[in-house]
Image 1 (cartoon, helix red, strand yellow):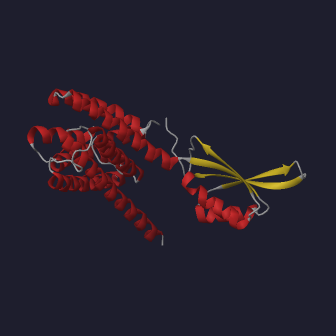
Image 2: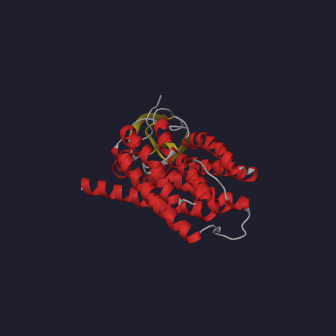
Image 3: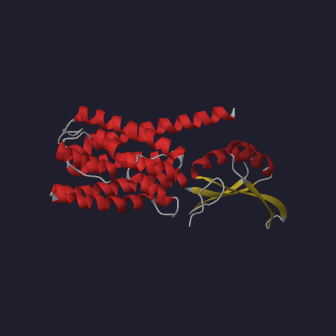
Length: 290
C-alpha cells in the first residue's frame, strides 16, 4: 500500500509538471516571443538566440540546460534532478511544437502588447510556480534559485526577478530596442508576482482553536484523516465556571475546510476560532533556514 501511494504521488507530480510546462510553452510561443518580448532565464536567452540566429527555442533550451543539470545532480540530489530533466525535456518538446504551430504570429492577432504581457507572463509565472511546488524546476536559472532558496529563506519570485533583470538588461546589447526592453521588464514583474502568488498561496497556514465537549473524537479524526497534530489545552469557561478541552491545530489553509467539516459533523455546537499565521516552521511545514 505504501509503495502504491508513493507511485501515485510521483505520478501526480509528473502529470502536474507536464501540464505546467505546456501552459508555460503557450505563454511564451503564443504571446511573448511573437511580440519580441523577452523574459529571463534560459527561455529568455533562447528567445534572443531565435531572433538572432533562427535556432528553434526547443533545441537551445535543452542544450543550455545540460551544464546546469549536472550541477543540479551534485547539489540538489537525484530526485529533484530527475524531475528537472523530465521538465526540461518536455518543455523543449512543447516549445518546439508551439513554435511550429504559431510561428512568428501571436496566438491572438492584433492583441495590445500590454495584454500580451499580462497573458503570456501570467501563464509563465503560474506554470513556474506549480513546477516548483511539485519539487521540480524548468532548469536554467531556476536551478540556481533553488540552490540559494535551500540555504536562505528568500522569496523565489524576488530571487527570480533579480537574476532575470540582469539577463534582460544585458540582452539590450543585442536587441537595441528600448520599447521591447520596457515590455520585457513588465514580463519579469508579472511572471515573478504570479509565481509568488502560486507558491505563497499554497504555503499559507492557519491556527485553529476548537472548543468542544467532543474534543477527543474531533482530535482523532483530524489526526487520522488530515494527518495533522493536535494539542490539548485545559481551560475553564469563566461564564459557566466549567472545565473545557481546547484543541489547537496548525494546518495548511487548504486543509481548513476539511477540518471545519469534521468539527461540524462531530459537534455542531462547537466554538471555532481561526487565524491566518505568517509562517510555520518544523515537521510537516517549512524547513528552518539560516
